[in-house]
Image (cartoon, rainbow, N blue to C red):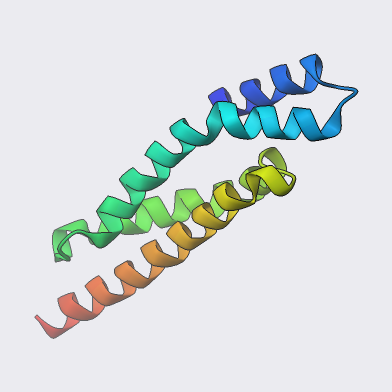
Length: 108
């Protein structure tokens, strides 16, 4: 939330007059770190389901849902489409896994 918004601010200041380069530069500068964050969440969502993980999944889902508007605002433009879509997919996957985990818990 803080680091990526500061990266965006720097790219905005440096490339304020060149829209296409500004967005592309930001996408290139943040894609690896954003990818790592999203892959961590994805690994949690894909891990073996257990009742103990339900609250972790729910917390992660809530955080991703709350961050969605900021992700949409920070990762604007065509160059950042993949990051926006990946964040939305992770949010859905966390919700689905939480539902399935809750179902498993209910059955147990």
